[in-house]
Image 1 (cartoon, rainbow, N blue to C red):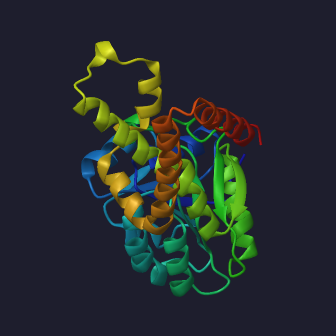
Image 2: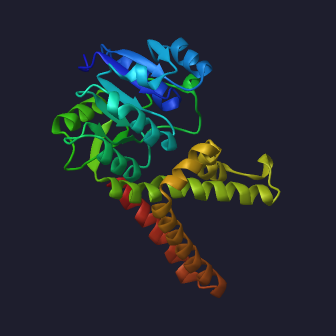
Length: 285
């Protein structure tokens, strides 16, 4: 099945970018894919693993004639790249990002792209604690959800093209506004990373080693092995929403601490019962 684009540029050939290229090729998109990055070593790996057809260190020249440009870099690099690219792209080019923070990026895009806007903020909820093109896989996006920006200033044709693109690589697209996205992701993704990191440090500081930990610790802290600089940037970019989520967690822990201090068995049990009920409802919906 042809995806409708002749030339696709993927800026950032780490896990997400390389996996996207592999998925497009596995599904026979018909597009020629250019991979762009800062490091020649990573670009060569992406080329060798078959994720891209050609490579470039220059995002501007690699994107100028592209039909679709996907920015798959860390979140702090997205806005500078938009500033660099916006004046020079084909007027019909579809531009997307994959960052897990949306409002800051979408607000900026609204200021620099003409209306109807052909930049569509996207967030495919795929990834893992591993990184680099060598860990890319064509199946990374299959069965996942892609959260896509919904805004009245977007080009309807660009929205439809973005939806078709992500459905092509196996995702289910859900639209929502950027502020709602960031509020939800602060609680469903960003706060869990903070909590996992905190727990990993607490256990380490307590002197535990591999002989003293079980599956529960490993399951809960798996994401603490993610790259620190990625989560530094995400945390700072979504600072307001994440601070609110941290306060909510602190309030919940304070309530549990108070019940535990009093020896209130009913309140302690209620804490866990309501948590199990809440999780069941969230995962079933």
